[in-house]
Amino acid sequence: MMFVEKHPIRDLLASRQAGADAPDDALAERDGATSPPDGLAFDADDADDADDAGTAWRQFRSASDRFDLIRAFAGVLRVHSGELQDRSQTLKARSTTLRKHAEPLGEQDAEALRARNAGPLGEPDAGVLAEPNAGALAERNAGALGERNAGECGHEGGVTGVPFAAESPFITESLLAGESAVLPWPNVGAGPEAAEIPLLGGDMTRGVVRVGGTVRRPVRPHTPAVHALLRHLEAVGFEGAPRVLGVDARNREVLTYLPGVVARRPRAAFVTADSTLVSLAGLLLRYHEAVAGFEPPAWARWDGELTRLVDGPPGIVCHCDVNLENVIFRPGPDGPRPYALIDFDLARPGTRLVDIIQTLRHWAPIAEPADRDPALKNADAPARIAVFCEAYGLPCAERARLVSVASRWLRRSRDTIAQRARIQGGAWIGMLEAGVGERLLRSAVWLERHRPEIEARLRRPDRRPW
Image 1: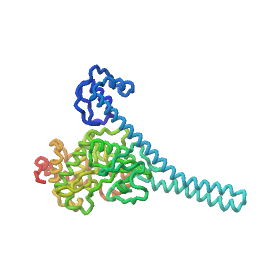
Image 2: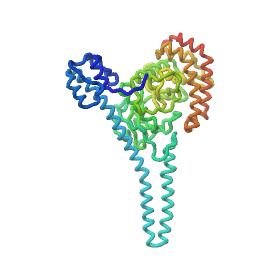
Image 3: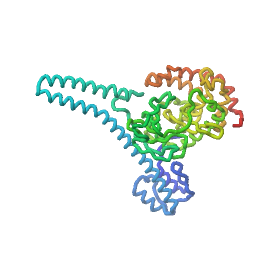
Image 4: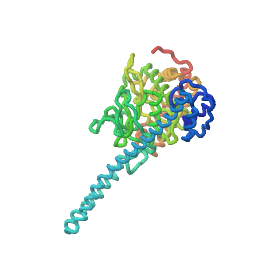
């Protein structure tokens, strides 16, 4: 699948000239009109011109045709409106940060000026006031612009100076999932007195907290691209992901908090049940279907790529990190069931098969028994792989390639983790020191050793009642 920019109005007009239904998949379902209005003579290549758009309006005579044109215009305006709002909020966040840094400088400059003015009144006063204030000014300026910035901006990439604001400022608001209230922004959510509750368990992103009905996360270079993805999921009605609310005064992204249960250690019995595996496969399938119509913007910058050249050209934007703690459960008739995915930081273009493999690595799991979570140490991994693929509806041709692609992905991921640890440091060094790279290599060896059994199960999956 090629990632190209869409022009809803141009596509609509071009399809009307051809006498076909407008490709309205990105906006809403068509109302059934199938033929262009009589006498339509419009050059679709000029559809962006306002005068030509007016001509199109006059030539679209029927209410149905005009409704389609209005809907196309509304889609374009909706996108541009969101982008303008995002730019505004990012600029406000940057302004707030600059003011915070400027305040201590202004105070110390005023003190230094008063010290210098005291000089003519007497040498002792000048000496007492000027030198200490000069030292204090230098020391405090170093603290404000040096150590303080290093602490606030010392995330991966070695950013210095003003705390990082999104390079591509496309951050927007939405409704709080599961709630009736609309949260105000830019400072979305509860007031400054609200308690910040750390959300633990993530390996890569530090400083994630819950504030009221929101989650606050550090802004990264890939945040705008992830927000574009989440806004698309919201637009198509996918309920299994958080909504983007904006950025707060501390330059943190603000997402809706999804209520439910996360599979913390020690794992509850329902987490490893086959019925959970079936529900998870359905959730991932729904995500893949929802994201299939997403065209990443030209400016999109995703977090590095651990799966480069593993499985051909990308077809969708994968989640790439559906581990046990990135899935939210809620009560169901037969116990808790997966209903949402969180932590899209590693999302990037890829193939459905790679996203399935990365999910199975944690949930089958694809790993040596000694390296597995205690709750899954004795799991029948080949059987669980087959159960998941059957529930997802993975085609036979993709099942035949699963082991080969998974082995290649595991080995290349191990090499990439080592490379990123050398270049970026941070959490990647922690992963390397924790032995993640070596576990991936052992997983590849285990997978290749069990290849005959896995492929036999994939050809004949067990049919189990849930």
